[in-house]
Each structure stands twice: as structure tokens, then as C-alpha cells.
Image (tube, rainbow, N blue to C red):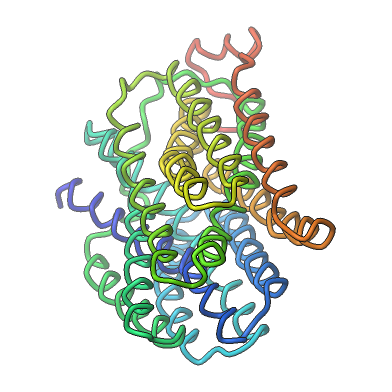
Length: 393
């Protein structure tokens, strides 16, 4: 089967698992709050449960090595995203939403790690690395889709329950469309070993960077729809911000994939996207319509591009351990995300708003970019002679 078809199936799988399974909560939050199902504190805890599930799923995926384990988690994650989204139709109140969001967090992490581990070597082996990068635009279009559906539901006066049902139906159609075409575990060819390998220390630093990124982006990503709803008093204009965020994210992936594919440029592009996102977080501090719109552009455009660049950087550092490092980095990312709602809760409790949390989040993104500017040690560069560290073989 053509690698292009398999990569397109990976694109749609991420579009469903991340855009619907992972991020459907964001456009639903204003509805859940206005319906009285939860309050703002409960919303933060439900979001934290989602990120905790994402962390658990990433750690489990990192430890799943055999082809049968990979396949079970990939297919199980996809089906769980559909079924748990459908179950949300009957959810009402704090505990039911918390448990369901935890489950979708686990499922979406399984899908992300497995699709990353399968699609990127497949694209490299086919000589189409740019297409492998564009796979990461899937979540952006998924976010755009959930946002547009939320906008239509709001204009039609539909409830959150109806919107969960619509999300589940769309997710099921997408899943049935790609099941036959997904890459098979063990079929992908490893990426070229000529790429510079700089060892575990580089991966450790990249994990810290990715964790700071998770903390930095998650507050605007979680509360953007709610901030817009408060600014526009629940009018339909507030529902434009989330689909625009997703569309900007998809465009950002495409733009970054068009850059010159060279190992020594990935680090600099990643620094640029992190600092651009920091500027977007600080723009959200303005709290008005133009500030939120600027936040959508500056946070949204580099959102998935950062994910793409981190995964590419990890393959440059350790080309022999793509699945393990994808799981490790996703776990670091999830840990950063998990701390975001807790930071938001503290910020809201002590200051009555999200401003202190946004300042810390933006500062974390600035620090993450700064860590990437520091070059690896000379000793690590000696690994460029071609031998990967023993632990990674």
C-alpha cells in the first residue's frame, strides 16, 4: 500500500484522537458552565484529570515495545476516543465528566505516541519527510472541526449533550474511514543512522523544554474559549476563537515543514516557535478582544509546530529509540500540562483571575527557548562519529 495513503490515515487518526478525543473539552467548557453542570474550579480539576490521563497513557506507551502491544494501544486508543466521547452524551456533573476526560487523556496519548512512532520512520523510509511532518497538522484541523461544530451548535441553540453526540458520530466516521490504512507495527523502517546522535543528556534537556512548553501553552489552550465567552458575554463571536486557534495550528505545521530540512536548524526553529508562543501568552494578559485574537495567532500558529519540531529533534538526538523517546517526551509534556490547571486554580484563588498564571506560563516558554540556545557539550558531539549510545540500541 502506498506510504502516502498510510500517512494520510495517520493524519486523520490524529485529527480524530486529538482534535475530538483530546481537545473537545475546551469548546464545551462555556456550555458546561452555563448549564450549571460544573463551576470554574471543577472545570480546572476536570482538565487536570484529562492531563493526568494523558501522562498515564504516555508512560504506558513508552513501555509498550512488542508489535502486538503497539497495535492494541493504537486501536484501543482510537476506539476509546469514540466510545468515551459518546458516553459524554449521558454525563452530567463533576465526577462523570472527570472520569471520562481521564479516559480520553489515556486514549489520546496512546494514539499520539504510536502514530508518531509509526508514521515518522515510514515517511523517512519513503523519502517524504515533509509528509511525515504534515501528519502533525491533523490535531489542528481536528480542533478547527470541533470549534466549527461548537459554533453551529451555539447558533442553533443546542446543548452540550447534543454536541457530544455530534462529536462522537464524526469521530466514528473518521475512524471507520482509516482503520484499513493505518501503518502496521513493525513494518516501518528505522530512520537513517547517519543522523547525529548526541545521547541521553540531549533527550533529558529536550524533555525539560517540552515540559515547560506543556505548562506554557496549556492555560490559554484550556481557558481560551472561556476567556472569549466572558469577553463577548456568551455571544456567538466567542466561538470563533477556538476554530481559529486550530486552523492557525495546522497552518503553522505546514509552514514549518516547508523549511530547509537540516538537523542543525531544528533547534533554532524550535526556539523561535517557543518564543512566539510566549508572546501570545503575554498578549492574552490584555484580556480584551484584540489581545485574545493576537493570542490565538501567536499561540495557535506554533502550537503543533512545536510538537513536530520536538519529535524531529528527538530523532536527531537518538534515531534508534523513536518510540521510547516519543513516550518519554509526551510524558514530560503531560506533566507540564498537568501543572497548568493547578497553577490556574492557585492564580484564581489568590488573585481572582488568570493573570499571574499567564505570566508564569509565558516566562516558562521564554526559559524553554533559552535552554535550547545552550549548545550540547563537546563530549556529546563526539557521538557524531556514528555510534549511538549503548542504552539506545
